[in-house]
Amino acid sequence: MARRVLEVSLHADPLTHRDSGVVGGQQILIRELVKNIQQHGYGVDVMTAAHKGSPEKFNLGHLGQVIRLTQELVRGMEGTWEPLVDKMAVQAMDWIRDSGRQHHLIHSHYWISGLVAEKIHQQTGIPWIHSPVKMAEWNQRPGEILDARRVEIERRLLEAPTAVVVSYLSEAEIIHSVNAGLPVYVVPPGVDPTQFFSRDAGPVLRACQITRRPAIYVGRLEEARGLRHALEVLADMDLPEDFVLLVLGGTRREIEQGVPTNPELARLKERLSGHVQFIGGMPHRAVAPYVAASEVAVALNQGPTLGMAVLESLASGVPVVGTKVPGVRDWIESGEDGYLVKPEAMADLWKLTLQLWKNPTEARKMGHRGQDKVHRHHTVGRMAEEMVACYQEVTGVGQNQLGIGF
Image (cartoon, one colour):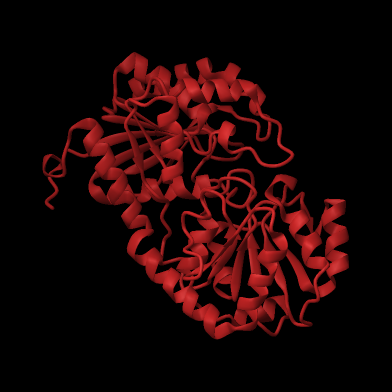
């Protein structure tokens, strides 16, 4: 019989089209994890919040499904979420009892999911793994206000779980400083190499009406991400006539007909003339051709990130110039498959970007080294294998007990 995992992901619904919006990499990561651990014989129920227009239940893979509770979480208003925890926990327990499902493990993602999972764990005794996902206390970016209540919750959620899973090693060090006795597993994110791979740049170049492979930024547009400051630095540089930066990201309200609704970004677009194009947000699968058509990718992050865009660029054979923050520095080997600079060194970042853009042969060599690294260490298959090993260790069940041979 298949072992069954309850993945609690209230903040990130793996089946909605918000890949380039508020949730981004976390949503993609959970979707790929759920799909791929099923290949190891695990049944998976993903519990998430309600979303207008989405069905209550929907299949995700041959052994998985998404279950949406009746309670919706308003995006960008995290201060209103905590009072909903008891209601969501009751709904979750009602569904578990009514379904008759026997779950062998709970895995929660992000603090709001951790609060609900904690209550399920207390009532059922099922082993519980928690993934904090960029805790506020260590994920603060310039201009962001630290939510003291969330910090308190996230620290408390490190006291009760059976184990914790994080994406990179520096997170493990942080958690051990809070709770030295808590088992911590490091499972790096993975990329689907059947979606992100080397491609012909022609279709994207024609669509964007450009003649050379561009540089590309994939990410959110808010101030704390650093895009505005990076563009201000770029606008002060002497740029080759045919250099273009594609900006992929943002919601429909943030980009209208290729122009940012943010006045400062709109001003910078005009100042940079044809050197920057705002493409806007799009479904995850549609991002891949743009990334693969680029000469070099930039990771402008001013704080920790999952780094999905970094790994997807490398998987596409595209080198990355990024900042020395967790989730960027963890995936780039400077001088081998890209370059790393200090977060405040935007001028250096653009100089290195232009250096690679002007030397396609060197960019291609670096990109191929990064692609090889992703194929060896950072595929969705590898991520699922490592996560399943964690699940087995926490529950005390090995592969042979699942009926699957090594």
